[in-house]
Length: 80
Image (tube, rainbow, N blue to C red; front, side, top):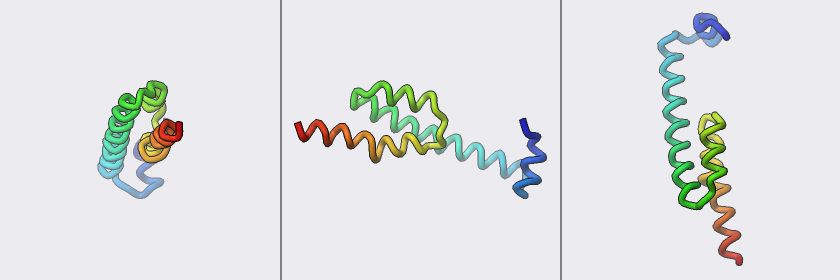
């Protein structure tokens, strides 16, 4: 694992700033993941909920689910 002082010297930012960035990313990911888990549970898609819990994607997978994949199932149901 890299030493935090090496990371800060590579990116040219202070350790405090790096800590703030990490906390902001963690809160961002948690917020999107919670919304996606709630939506997938309401749509009775438990495998998606498990995927959100297992994969750390900085909010990318939950955002894609909320705005793309969850709507596919609704469109398929409406066509039937």
